[in-house]
Length: 141
Image (tube, rainbow, N blue to C red):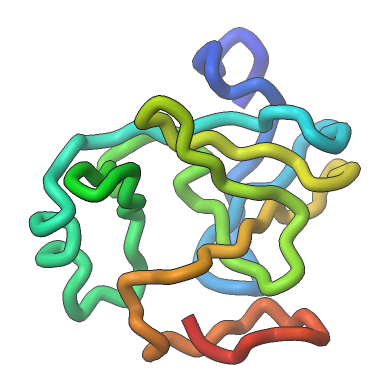
């Protein structure tokens, strides 16, 4: 994604490619300083009940609950940040701000480094093995 083609809410250049963690991941294509907004994901606004129904039995879930009643399903989105994988020692954080799903760097992220966040509670309910490889890995999502 180049500066000319990325949406205004995607603040840094990133690339989607195969991840050693799981499936595809999003990787920094330029240096990202700490505490800076990296980008957002957008998608279909759905109810939390519908989100939980859609998530049942799926291994890859691109749904984020943004409030007690509303969730965003990013599975049809073109935003590269939807490929952000979980890590028990992440280099970024996911923040819900005014119903938007935003990603911020926790530290310097170097070009080529996979951008990761701690998913926290997930729809997997402890049934999906974590493959982040961090020394403090929790083992399951």
